[in-house]
Image (tube, rainbow, N blue to C red; front, top):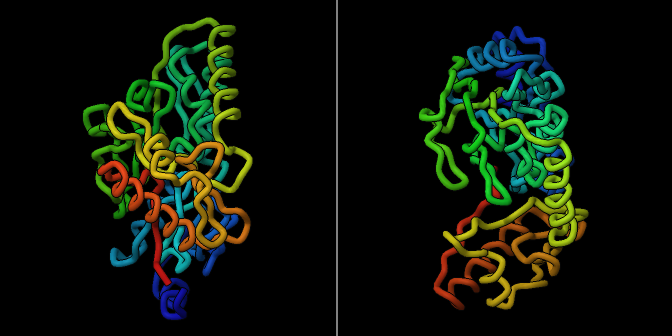
Length: 305
């Protein structure tokens, strides 16, 4: 982070907040890939009000982004310009009333699935196979095993870049495959979902099946970001990657997983540049082999160096 931005934060902004502000903060330890640069500023708000006050006080020319548990994300080696918002325990609450579950944006998807199991609510089982937190799941309409966030969504709360709170219904979200139509500056802070009464034994059985399938087919115990590329309509990205001879392909410290070739792995020494270049090489080879243009599912953010 530049000394100029540090000086402005300390001396020029009226940041009367209760949350924690860190400068030139390490982000690599907060991401699944365990690589990438630092954040100019990392802010962990105490609650929605604290986040709103912070954003209202922050000049509009400073970019802001939210960070969950760092899955499905590649932070480039030059780090993140501006402010990264990290959601702590205060945003991880989960509650249920009748057939509704309300969760904070920092709640892990798997925890929401388990809460639904405890409440004997069906429809949330797929979240057992979705890495990350509810905030990220909302932003990208996360899905797995035949279901998506849109299928259980009721309403959400988000704070915009100016610090204003918004309530969003299903129509407001503009759901599509791995995408929502909300403004880019919206930061989700929580949401409510609806399930249906189910049998706890059957719900657990389905969740166990999902967990076992993931364990058997995906390199879960590695430094990876999850599925790298979106599946083309009705097709599987991994098959095109495999047919293009990319299984096990390596650049620097990054490798295409041999267990599931739609996953890229940091073998321990990979830079974010290694990982991104490997992904682009996979895309090039798939295009040359099949004419298919793979689209990144992993979000690549930050400055190049």
